[in-house]
Image (cartoon, rainbow, N blue to C red):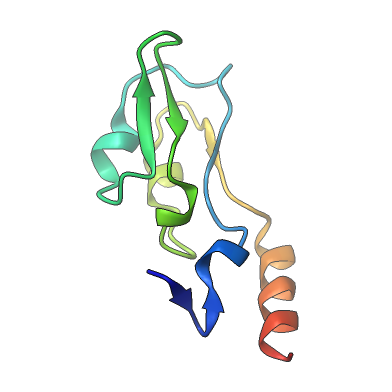
Length: 89
């Protein structure tokens, strides 16, 4: 996806962040996400974000299904304010 609501995807700060201390290396997030946003790092035995802009804007499925609650996304209110500001330009 190159644009979302007319905004270039690379300008939208929507992608997961993985807390390495919480990640248990189960790979559930990698299995769930079909957009290759995440990959498994063999050296750390943890998931990592490799293609952040492949993430579907407003999707939080990997975070909802993470058994360790190791995945987070931007604050909803801040993200909404960002989008409203961008769309009003």
